[in-house]
Structure formats: C-alpha cells, structure tokens
Image (cartoon, rainbow, N blue to C red; front, side):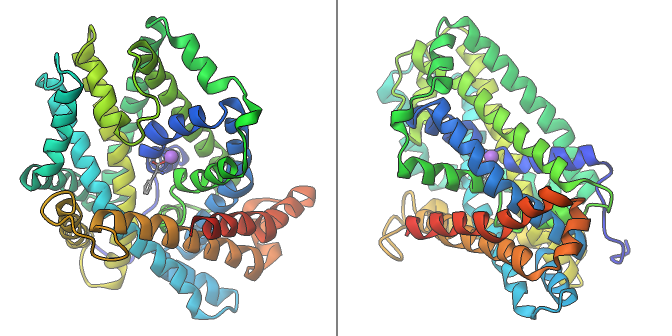
Length: 446
Ligand code: PHE
Ligand code: NA
C-alpha cells in the first residue's frame, strides 16, 4: 500500500455518522440526562444549546477546517496550516497536546468500555435477575476488585478498537459506524418506546423539559459550557483527524449543525429511555456514576422483560463507547502512520498496545494499586482529571485562538462560505465568545 495518498470519507453522510459516533458516548447516555434533571430541565437545555451554538459549534468547525486544510494528522496539520499563514511552528503543539490527550483518554476509556462489555454479557446470562440492591452492588464492587476480570474485558474492548482502526478510514471506521450507529438509534428507539409503556413517561418528559428557572446559577452555566465541549469530542485532535479525510466541497457549518443536533437528540432520547425506568422503580436519581452500573441493573433484574431490556441498554452503551474509542485511537494512529515507516495496521497495533498497557495501570488503581500516585489521586482518576481539566480545554483554546486571531480572515470566510453579517458573527464568536467561554470553564475548574 502506498502511503502517499491520503484517505477520504466516501461521502458526507459517512463523515456525519463517524463524527456523530465519536460525539455520542457516555456523555450523552449517562451524563447529559442526569445534568438536565439536576439543573432545571428545559431551562438547562436552553442554556446548553446556547453554549453548544456559541462555543461548541465554532470549535468543531475550526478543528475540521484545520484538518481539511492540513490533510494530515493533527500535529502536521497544525504545523502546515500555521506555516501557510506565516505563523511559527510552535502552533504544532496544539496538535501534539491533542494526540497525547486522545492517547491518555483511550487508555482509561477502554477500561470503562470493558465494564460495558462485561455487563452486556452479564445481562444475557441473567446476572442481575432477582438480585437485591446488595447483590447488584456486590457485582459492581466485585468487578472492580478483580484485576483479572477488568484486564480481560479491557483487553477484549481494546482488541475490537484496534481491529476496526487498523482497517483504515473507509473499511474500518466507516464500516463500523455504518453498522453501529443505526443499531444504536434502533436500540434507543425501542428503549424509549418501552419507557412510554411504563406509565411514567410523562414524569420523565416533565423532568427533562419543564423549565425551572430557579435551578439556574453560575455553576450550572459552567457545567453546561464544559459539557458542550466534552460532548462534541473537542480538544483531542479527533475532529482535526476526521477533518483531514474531508474533501473540499463539504459545507462545514451545515455539517456541524447536523452533528450537534444528532448528539443532542440522542442525549435527550437517552433521558427518555432511562428516566421512566428510574421513576417506575423508585430508583435514586442522584446516584451519580453508579446510576448505569448499579441502579439500572437493579431495575432490569427485577422487572418483566428486564433481561432483554438490560441487554439492549448495555449494547447501546457498548456501541456508543466503541465508536468514541475508535475516534480516540484515530488521531494517534494517523500521527504514527504519517511520521514513521509503519503501515496503517502496524500503527494501529502499536498505538493500541501502548494505550492498552497504560490502561492496565488505570484498572489496577481500582484494586491492588489504589494508593495515590500524584496529587492524592490514583492512576485512573489522575488520567481523567489531567485530560478533562487541563489538556482538552487548553487544546481547544489553542485551536480557536489560532483560527480566530492568526488565520487570514478572508481565507476562512471563503473556506466556510461566509459573508456579510454571518461572517462578522463568526469572527466575533471565534475571537471573543468561544475563547473567553473556554477560558472561563478552564479557570473555574481549577
Ligand atoms: N463525546 C463523548 C461523549 O459525549 C466523550 C468522548 C470523550 C468521546 C473523549 C471521545 C473521546 O460521551
Ligand atoms: Na456527546
């Protein structure tokens, strides 16, 4: 295989599916519904949509534009786009931070993907059936306490990710999202349909959409801002890598709008699937991270049809995690492939094994290596905090400052097909609104 031709998405639709696959993850299925419920329902949704539109969307478009202009991995793309704009090479550091961030996140993301696989199997074999809260709790803590079990499922998950990415952009990435995304949508529709039969759908609708303006405060706005960033997989080089496989003709703003809408619809759909079950079984809404792995299985284990519903739910979660994980490996693989003599598949194997090895340190921090290694945190939490609090916001900020202030304004307008008032709005967003928004989130999270 020649390494000189750069791959391309086979259609705009495939690109949308892949970008949506990256965006839709745990953030949608667990975090977003939960945040909405806690923070004032429709009032929060409105704030969130503003954040997405004013900050998330401009950064998404910017990352794609840099990737498309550079036609290569995030590091080289930043370097070459900067060079063409007469800017110093140090801008490549934005790409470096993105690739490193993606690598670090993949290492522990795969551990959670492993939990999801384990629970998918567990729902088939009836592990939740008839269990009480203690039994379900013991299942979860037993899993965390077992290095062997965690390692097994982390390894299987990472093998799947490597296998997909190794096959390249069209065969691997597109092949996977073409199957997984429609399956995800179907599973979600069925689960929402089930929610309608519980007699608690109205309660869920009310919880998600009835605005309670009094619940809004500075903290909530900050959370919405931060989530707008995370939910679109920004600041990891992912969207730069995905943009590098784009041709000239795609309208980036229109495409970003589609991806943002799909991401939001799936997040709201997840809420309409989960909350009726939560209400029908009087489960604890505020159970935080354990909602998915402890609280819901309790309901699945004790309701009619729970076996099949539990299976569908954990399949949904696994598919969402898988399409996000392949997007995390992609920028790393693109970098290794283009910067070393290694082939595409060898690059995928080498990068994947690296992240897998780091993931072992992360999973051991749940059991035999639970002592803090740095800042009072174990490896898993350290990787999580380091990436989400520092690397992602700084990388996103770097990309948006670069595009807003250092790229030729007319060139950007032409790239994005903007003119008149829309162009002025774009400049205002990329120079002021988005950078200030990201900076505020970053500083306040410290
Ligand atoms: N965007 C994903 C979500 O909403 C999160 C994610 C983070 C995806 C990192 C890929 C990489 O869940
Ligand atoms: Na998301």
